[in-house]
Length: 186
Image (cartoon, rainbow, N blue to C red; front, side):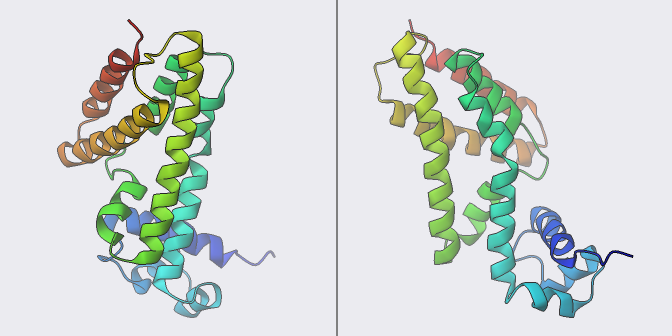
């Protein structure tokens, strides 16, 4: 009989618990209870809750590769790829874990610096798509791609937060529609 992979169970449980209760609103015991593993298993794989939080953050970021892949697709226009990317990010009643961690953990340097790197990476991917739109004339070119990408990333985070507060996916849908209008070349 195969031995269960406690690390993966703890990571999955950590993601769910942090998503639902917040990082500060949960403890190691909450995570191991949710994972249904002994508390000692936690410390075999993670030296602290903070170490788990950072690994959960990486897991969440990597899970978003599919949504970011929409930006790199070559079979759609840049404007359509940005919309498909935002649609793939979509709405979750718990919000975006990166946004949640940003609000909750900005005072902890390890989290703050890693989240900042993730936002920069995301902005870079959006900006690359926008530059393609500048080149083919489908996206307005009166502003730098990096500035437009920053607006999209910051706006999506705000839309996801407001959607979380209102428990209404229409908030993200309105943001997507606004971005299409905002980016479209005259």
